Amino acid sequence: MATREESRQKREEKLDELHEKLTGAVEQLVTGEDWADALRFSARFRSRSFNNVLLIWEQHQAAFEQGRVPEPFPTYVAGYKQWQQLGRQVEKGQPGYQILAPVTGRFASANPSDPASWYRLGRGEKPKPGEVVRPRIVGVRPAYVWDVSQTAGEPIPEPPSPTLLEGEAPNGLWDGLAQQTHAAGYELMRVPHEGMIHGANGLTDFQAKTVAVRENMDPAAQVKTLAHELAHVLMHDPDREDTRQHRGIGEVEAESVALMIGAAHGMDTTGYTIPYVAGWAANVDGKEPVEIVKATGERVRKTAAGILDQLDTAQVPDGTLPGLDRDAPRPARSKERTAATVAEPEHSRAPEPATARGL
Ligand SMILES: [Zn+2]
Image 1 (cartoon, helix red, strand yellow):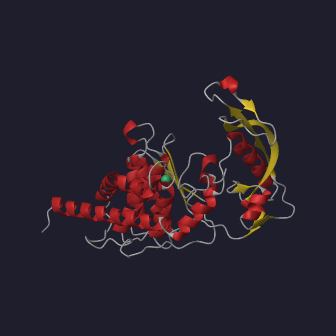
Image 2 (cartoon, protein in one colour):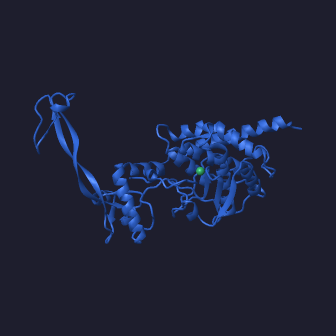
């Protein structure tokens, strides 16, 4: 008979193996054509100044309140001609959002390190030999931009988005996870819909010490969300120095734990987990998404093993953790944008303008 130590070791090996497969699946996704198309598309939207982001938000909110756009938050925003170049037309009756576009002038200097030596070149004027030319902002002028939802035409390339899980939850899993949430000092609430938790599936509030999960999705999706939130509770309390974590990395970790908890109970969460993890890993600056996922492996495995240890649910016997065993897991592309697209968090404390692409 296997000793306790042996079976623990075996499970850790399984969890490591599962994490390697998850990393491979993320790699496959972020190196795929859909992902590349989406990146190429979003690269055509330049970032805007903070003031213009605010201007766009304010006017988009007003348009939403008047029923002119279907979503409260702007996503891709561009000028009239830019939209035409992207194969889309601004729809009739859609007024643009006024922003302030920088006006630049050309400045020349024979001695660039001396600030007093720079002078502005006139229209068509050429610099003298040996002079350096640089553009500088000399003022602003009003310009107009439109949100993608005010345009029609060529489809928008988007990265594959997470698909909500369907069906029943494994027996006893919700209760077991709920118990651990309570044991960690958190109150667990079920809310009727995503509107109560910033459009997310679940929300962990570290200040109020509450975890909320929305009820208007299948039990499998609810229990997967609870596993995700419990991982946040155990791993990401911002008041504890050892658990504070970059937002993107935190989401990668929490969802990876959820995948492991699901897999240990025979649940295949890959259709949700892979695009979610890939999306957040791609949101961490300075590193490749796959490197981000790899680096979280040990913390994720430890947390998942800790949660599984305390569950008295029927878990899949060693060796058959499902979910990532296919060669090429390709998450289904959902046509509708659900409450949980890549750009949106499983939980969020406040809407974040920075996540709106193209602003
Ligand atoms: Zn989360």
